[in-house]
Length: 238
Image (cartoon, rainbow, N blue to C red; front, top):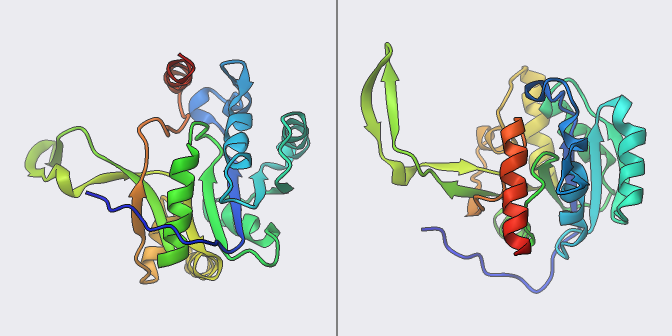
């Protein structure tokens, strides 16, 4: 079981870097971040979650060059006052996050990297990860794996993998700025690719604290995910 992180009375400056530079290939090329989710664009839900979170001071949005203007207008339309800049991403996640760090205010101490396509992240999930990173240097929300997991060899089940040792990682993943910057610069220099920012930080020897995620904090990847997210939102409204 995860332990609740003891909250401190004060936080250093926290900037959320929202990564929104993907191509939406599994949505058939349609920009998934502009798709309506209960009548509001996916990206607007994501930005609003951080706008409302007291633990986050600033927002930086990283996207494709062609999306800078429409995303800026979207943020203005939905009253995202914490947004400091919308900046162009790179050809990889590492390059995009590095661009976001470079665009963050100079006094930023903690960077919270979040997928633009996770619109249902809660204030509780964000806040716990931020406070854990402030205390331990790095933190990420996780949820226990529900399914039984098998190891496959040559097309056959070779062994069971103990489910209680596994978890699915989510975002925001929160790090001390200098820790994340060093890890991603090392990855870029070595030409290494990682599935998430935790892996890059772990490769440099930093332990990442696990915090409580939520099964509602899904990532919009396919059309079916839109339906699932709307069901969660309607359930909350009821």
